[in-house]
Length: 171
Image (cartoon, rainbow, N blue to C red):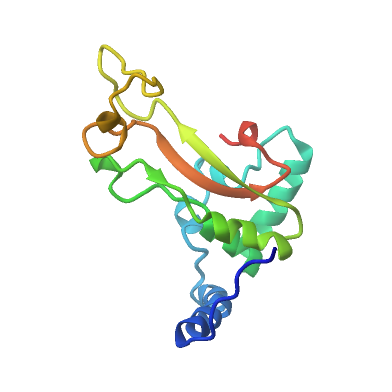
């Protein structure tokens, strides 16, 4: 079962034109998407795990990092498919799932297998003196549905990674 074909419309033609044009334009402008924001910062290892014991993951991550730096479309798609620290974080918005479909569709283009992982960062926020067991099945549904001030205080990001890396390789 292949992926469904997008109908031949003006929207499809614009999508296809920009899918190929944006990496060229990024290169002309000297930007790499949000990776420029993380350049040289510890947070970059969340997207490109480089300082890990897993030798295969480290090698695939080096290929991924080089692909980003060289504006290779597959690498920019991986980066684009990954969730970013969301806007509104200080207002209780703790989740960006990224784009699962975009991540999985890169498999034919990338030089290695791809995985989509959900990264959950706990201890991001201060908690009440009496902690809430957010994973308890007894928690009232209206408290666990989201919406301030009852959001689970965990940052959740969907990350597109080389399949040779797992959550233990992320920092």
